[in-house]
Image 1 (cartoon, rainbow, N blue to C red):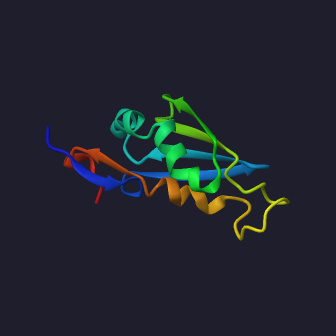
Image 2 (image 1 turned 90 degrees about the vertical axis):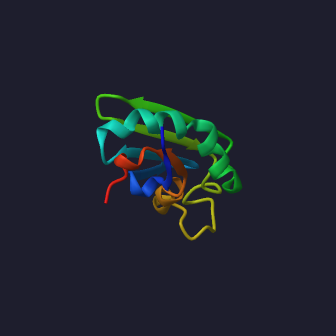
Length: 113
């Protein structure tokens, strides 16, 4: 099967929240048929590697098959959190864009506009 490599932002959107030094990122594909493909490729291991430079040391993924979405909980990635960091984005709200920078391989027919 032929595939093309694209960044996640072409296939999905994300929402981010935080509590203390923990980030919570939901990944929601634009098309339901992408869910299983993204499950296979957007693994906790890949997400941990992506956030390692921020000090992340654990990632847990929760699959939400009825919503065709995933939720990632990333520990120790906010340099101490809002009150404990000099980081300009202590809340971690913009970190969903970091996740959306990951590349995945999908059939060309599933790439939206």
